[in-house]
Image 1 (tube, rainbow, N blue to C red):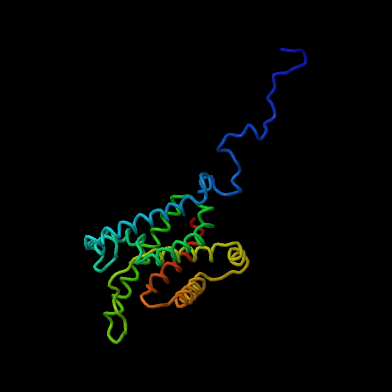
Image 2: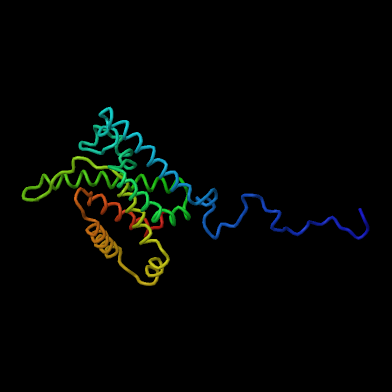
Length: 229
């Protein structure tokens, strides 16, 4: 080699970085951003559309309720625990949930993995639907309680409300307040119940599954407080 040259390592530059070695902004290495932060949102929207088209076929052959509507007793058609989360009662229902999904889900999708997002969405949506069936059924069986059991429920509203609840409880402002002010756990739960009740009543309308909305939002608040995503 030429005189004066040493066989020493060359300083590492940004051009030496491999395609997957880009900074991640302090987040975990397995975030959804490594292949596009919008990916889980777009995937859920695609499932919405596919399921809605399948609903049309099922309605034509008379199998809509058995395939896509969560009805009591749940054990008769257990698959509807999943399918009902992605099914919708009409194009307006589909569009409203799709818009809410993009608004509330986008910030969360940027800071978690695709798998966690989908599991959270499905789990909270399923639990919201089950709670609507169970709570109204129990209430209707209690004497002097003016309640009507829910005949069937479908839609992603419970999961969407869970995303909203997660945002409310996990944002920087809420986390800063929680780190400064020592609040007993029971009081936190009580505040969450009151907040979920207020949001639920604000969305009250005919044929709206209020128990599902309450359950989804409350679960989202608890999950956001624990930063599970």
